[in-house]
Image (cartoon, rainbow, N blue to C red):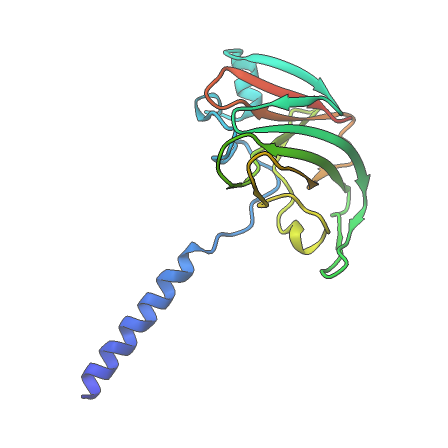
Amino acid sequence: MKKIASIALIVLIIISLSSCSNISEPKNNVTSEIDEGVNHDPKNFQGGLDEAMEDGNFTLVKNQIGDEIILTTLNLKVNNVEEKQSISSYYGSAAEAHEGFEFVLILLQLKNTTNEEFEFSQDLIIMDDKKREFNSYPNTTDNLDNCIENRKLSPGISETGYLVYELPKDSMSYSIYSWNAGTDKLYEIKLK
């Protein structure tokens, strides 16, 4: 009986540990490749955004803050951009940018143009004037109210919220980029 109880306990521990394997580590905010996402065309990101741009096998569509971009699954518009040294949430905790860095808060408006709800798992990359690429700042839902990352988007309804990035203060200019899935179009929005 003790053997059966011991085996059952071991099996229970193994099952518990395997269910924890779905927990992912926070993303590093600097990247050389874009993760899979809603408007990402993987054939274009073999060596990162900078290499894809040098390759030139796409159409670059340049936009400014306030321009609406019509993508395959959603319409996207950057309404505002601001730089801050710290961010905070009413219910969460504050976060300070690392020394020599600052937060870039991007106020996005998104509209799901499909017939089904989906979660906005952003794959927007910022590239600065020094050709450095940045993913969004990890765990912003704890540090900022109205964070749009991982928000469920219902069909036809516009949602507004923030994406946060942490960039070096020596970035003189930067833009955000998104591929239009299934096309050769790369959209650029000049932020600074």
